[in-house]
Amino acid sequence: MIVANFVNGASVTAEETSPLVDPATGEEFGRAVVSRAAEVDAAVRAAEAAFPAWSRTTPGERQLALLKLADLLEANAPEISAAEVRETGKIRSVLLDEEIPQCADQIRFFAGAARALGTAAAGEYLPGHTSYQRREAVGVIAQITPWNYPLMMAVWKIAPALAAGNTVVLKPADTTPSSTVLLASLAASVLPAGVFNVVLGDRDTGRLLVEHPVPAMVSLTGSTRAGVEVARSAAATVKRTHLELGGNAPVLVFDDADVAAAAEGVVGAAFYNAGQDCTAASRVLVHSAVHDEFLAALVKAASAQVPGTDFGPLNSQAQLDRVLGLLARTSGVVHCGGKRHGSSGFFLEPTVVSGLGQDDELVQEEAFAPLITVQAFGSDDEAIALANGVAQGLASSIWTRDTGRAAALTARLDFGVVWVNTHGLVAPEMPHGGFGASGYGKDLSMHGLEDYTRVKHVMIAH
Picture 1 (cartoon, rainbow, N blue to C red):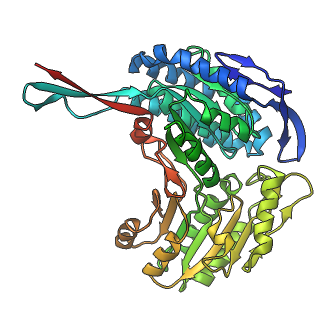
Picture 2: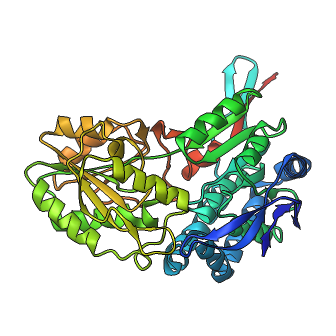
Picture 3: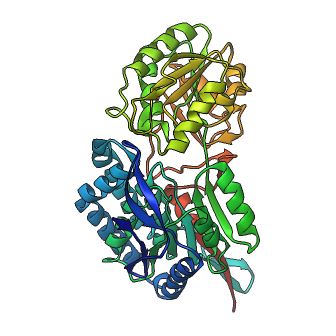
């Protein structure tokens, strides 16, 4: 089995390939092509050729195409989920019941949003002159997606870009290409050739795509390190960048919270997708008055999670080794887990660690694993200082019955998303994106659509 590029409406192979490994077993099951300069250039040129006609389509025409794509995604959910399970180890029911329906809903949102872009009213802002604004497509968009949510992150990228009239060349992570290629093959029946292209490969492939002179914008979801590299490379040709990078979400649990409910909620949000989520509830801060009670409830809830049943494996041996290294170097107390689960695949036991200082590596680094750290605080000010005391600023949550406290603290948390008495939920109508080392630009919502447009002022003398 070889997974190929999808360019200009057709499957395209390449000479070089790399192995595809099932993370639930650790065994190779196929290969994917690795694109180099010629393959990347072909995909970009296809998108470039398709852009003039696609950008001139009406919002209604683009809406209709995206609505058809959402229908096709739902109709082919079993095939797409099977491909993604094989490459990620995700729980199949989660894909079928949660992630794919969300993807279809998000495509439908942007289908409608394409017809609702607003701007300032046309008028005479200078005597004898009428001004108005145009929102236009940016051009060819280079997009790079991660391995934790291959299909969903592809949807978050392509739906607003296509809705705005852009054309796309997308490179998925080298370990998880298949669901993105399947999405592109479905799109080929409703989109003109060249509008949505997929090139497979490694970091060098991504670098070739970012540095290619044709794309006008680069959109990346990935690590902070990758975001820095992309921003640096894109600057050489003054490309626009849209960076959704790593997270290290704090969870603030106050002494008036429902301890049992909060512990269950935190574990669910921390271990979803094996904790391989930029918004994972991984860094728990608990009021000292309920610290011991909450820690016990958290350890009980975490210990009940079963790897392979409640959550899947880590993405690769390298990712598992990285997390085990973090645990080996910590000075904290490991209350449960902390070790590899089983002898095959890349599973980690559900893990809870306490007794950590703010400068501990486990606190400062995003683990991206089924791993929760616990720290105590004594006041609201201390809670905010600990929460904001990391480089990342993507997501956070507050657990309290005091609505006044919640309202006050949401303003002080330096994160792009703040949940209250819940964690991890997204809605297509609401923006998703962070601050600081978590990047800039918004996914989802009208803000996400506007990020893929440029604004032009037109003035007519009369």
